Image 1: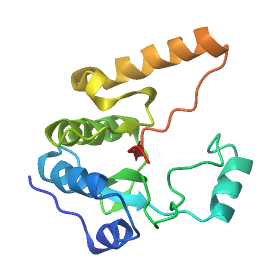
Image 2: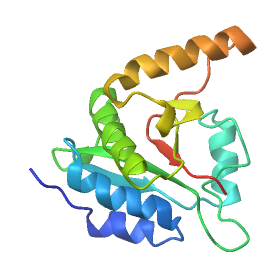
Image 3: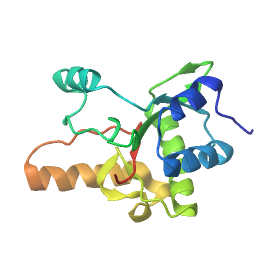
Amino acid sequence: MTFYLGAKSRAKMAEGLSPDLIRCLNFAIEVTEQDFCVWEVARTLDRQAALYAAKATRTMNSYHIPDANGRVHAVDIVPWIGGDARWIDAPGLKVAKAMHRAATKFSVQVTWGGVWDRTFAALDPTALDDEIDAYVARMKAHTGKKPLIDIWHYQVPR
């Protein structure tokens, strides 16, 4: 089945999203096994502060906050199931696989919130759940803490 990005997703992408991420999203929706929507692109400092206070993020230096040129370097995308956005891991990993394919096709250095310390190019798209486990083990060994896993998040360098 072929999917397409709806009007709300396209409107969010128009909030100054990096052209590299737009290119990846447009390709990923064509090749994905799982429909998805663009959930969030640009954030205000107030929204970021609220997410930080709620421990939904560990930084105030989010790539969702527009840079000096108004460019946003991050996007959150969520599986679209039964007419609604659903934060379910298995479908989210299918979306990540499509984004991996897009990033590879266009040679875009996408960092995924499932594995923050490596770009998609260094990950095995057929074993993204194993890649997450390996990342968690690396971070626990390095910091003694479990890292924040955000499989809905994708970002490119500023």
